[in-house]
Length: 203
Image (cartoon, rainbow, N blue to C red):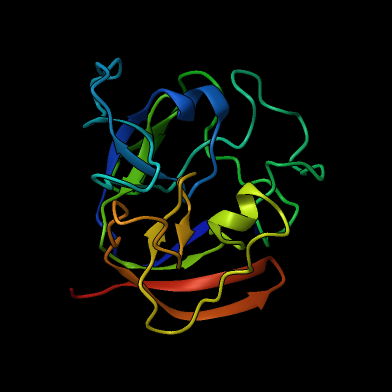
């Protein structure tokens, strides 16, 4: 309970090292990233990444990651009602890192998945089928100036883009925002909150 993105089927992924605003601010799994020119400090990672603003090359989205203020993890696994809670989600934390340092986690094939908050799994788009709780509820205008915009609508077949803060959105915020390669198959709600079923689609 409390996961931000559930990969329901497939999904090509690689280990990456978050830098810049991801490491400085913490992040939710499901945050989209772009490749960074920063030098790798952890050699098992395949690239460094930073939060995407939705334009340019979309490297992928992080599947694991911290939801706390670096470098100290909070003792409780419960959210307070603050800006870190996912939109439309529950109040349970999904701890991505093992700790805020360098502890390892391996998958069933003994492949490195994450090392504390220094390396995480990134899903390469457009691959897989996912149940996705992290996405924009309101359009850019509403997020910028409340009362001037609208609630976003998600319908089956809608193309999905990345917002200016690195979340999935049905709104193409500018001509510079490319399609992710994913489309909506269903929007629904369960005990964890409102979610999208998202699938990789052919262009």
